Image 1: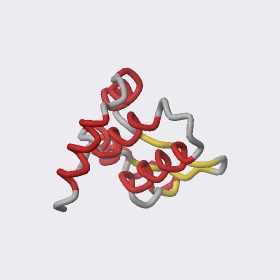
Image 2 (image 1 turned 90 degrees about the horizontal axis):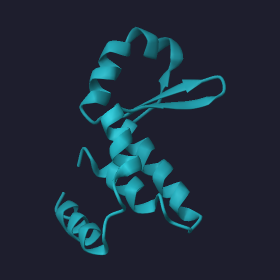
Image 3 (image 1 turned 90 degrees about the vertical axis):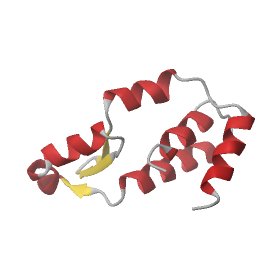
Length: 99
């Protein structure tokens, strides 16, 4: 379940449907949980960066909006990996249907 957010992003990154953007945002919000206030994030930066390196993104709330902290490996995976096939999406849905 930890990497489910990457599958959602990869699935919708080439989507031409407007709801794709909403689904990607929702997946990131669910994966990162509640956003950290900037002051709290500064105090917990070591823990947040370790979590990001283990596939757990974090959201940090700033004056200008939200910042998402992800590892470089996860970012490259999301950007460079091709979108999954329908078969991969269905297999993943079945695997998470038992949760």
